[in-house]
Image 1 (cartoon, helix red, strand yellow):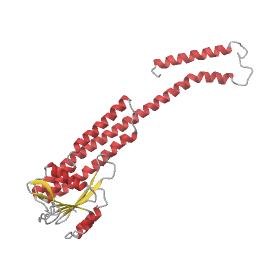
Image 2 (image 1 turned 90 degrees about the vertical axis):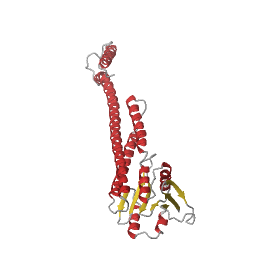
Image 3 (image 1 turned 180 degrees about the horizontal axis):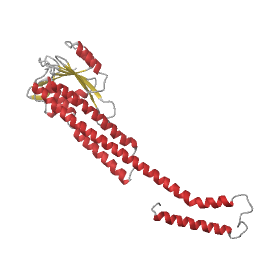
Amino acid sequence: MMAIVYELNQPQPLRTPSIRANPRPPLVKVITSHEFDALPNISPEGRNGLAALEPAEMNFVELYPSFVIGSFAVPDKTDPTADPDRMSFYLDADRLIFIDDGTVATDMLAKVASSGILTKATTSHCLYALMKTLIADDFTWFSLMEDAMEKIEEVMLDHSETVSSQTIMGYRRAAMRMGSYYQQIAVMADLIADNENKVMSREEARAFSHVAAHANHLADRAETLREYSLQLRELHQTQIDLKQNSTMQILTIATVMFAPLTLVTGWFGMNLTVLPGLDWPYMAATIITLALVMIVAMVLFFKKKNWL
């Protein structure tokens, strides 16, 4: 188990190897689910609530009279459609416990410590700093995503490369997944900011409203990119339709050009001896000449109409 203590006006975490080295109880703990089950002084309501949240891949918070529990499902920005990293937390006035069987909580707390945004040695302020860190650099990530989508649009307009539908749909799914993530974070922050159970001070609770506003802006940004991905999908489908129409146009022109030859072949290929001109020695040359003249005339006509 790793213990992290945040001292007032000293935001860097002090990792204590033992309780003797620092007699003060740790303000923030990161433990596994099995270690949490062994912790004393946890209400049965909190244990049952966290047990219900553990398998869920969602961001959720629930307020109780003397504590707050919640869960985070943090998407991997290299592949937002993959399974998210999950962790949950237990917050009261004296401690903030993160239950994490992986490393996401430890990584986030390391970012909080290095960012310098932790200025108060309270559990609620630490949770606020972590939630703020979760979404701190995401506008930059969206900008990179938009740049990649713009390049795909240019490629499709220039016909320089082939773009697959899976690539475009990948951006759409990523935007939808991230948009849902930010909406859930915004709801969490709003519920904590209401501070119905008075676990934190009014000032600390009000700080969560800034997280909610930031998350809502990110959700709007995700929705904009989702709509952009739909436009790319429509552009891609339009180009596919144009290619199909071009192919059908070529096949139609070829069919029309060979129609006279087909007619002549069918006419003189009948097993009849009464057809006029069968015994004329120049009939074959005449038919070939007429066929060539008609083909040349149709080619010139199609070129004039820009069909070829």
